[in-house]
Amino acid sequence: MARRRTLHPEELEIWQAVARTAKPMHVTGPLFLNPVAPAPHHPAETAPPHSAAPRLPVFRLGEKSRSTPAHDLLPSLSESLASAPLQMDAKTHGKMTRGKLSPEARIDLHGLTLSEAHPELIRFILNAQSAGLRLVLVITGKGKRGQDIGPIPQRMGALRHQVPQWLRLPPLGPAVLQISEAHLKHGGSGAYYVYLRRR
Image 1 (cartoon, one colour):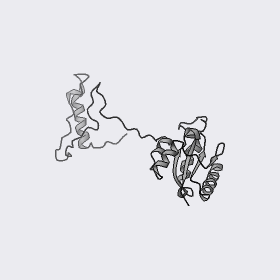
Image 2 (image 1 turned 180 degrees about the horizontal axis):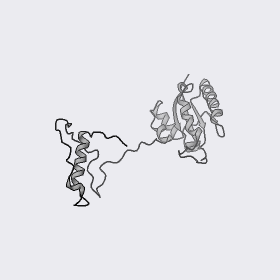
Image 3 (image 1 turned 180 degrees about the vertical axis):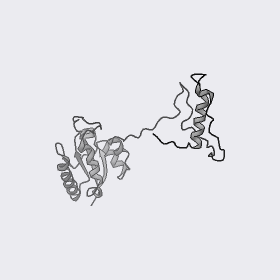
Image 4 (image 1 turned 45 degrees about the vertical axis):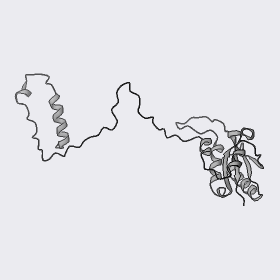
């Protein structure tokens, strides 16, 4: 048998409000001959009533939403690269993104796994910087859509997403001045322009 507990003042008010709205099923009967008296109400024990502000504004049926919900979605790779602060000369950057500058060297990482591509990229970038090159092209490919069997969607193109992160982290971060998506004639979204710092 469950133990009875005493009701808190707020619970007691709610219970009395519900009991007042209850309608008897049978007007005559043993229960209604001796009704149970409600528990005494002690105003000293009750907590001061707090004004419960509504969590949502009042909304009527057919009314338009007052504000558009902000979706916290991860920006695409090209958007995040385009919104990165400009570290190089704006005129040179404009020429580079329009495909007017031709890369001085290129590396193709097509078909390599992440563990194979990372050391190749490090070797290529550091050798290019030591040779005094400024603009190099890193080709990653756009990636193939794999079999999506899990509940979490997978990004297409592991190398395409990983290379910009590698270029920002040591040992490549100090050597790289700017990363930008390549122009269509140099590979488009499947390649990156990497503008290197002078040694």
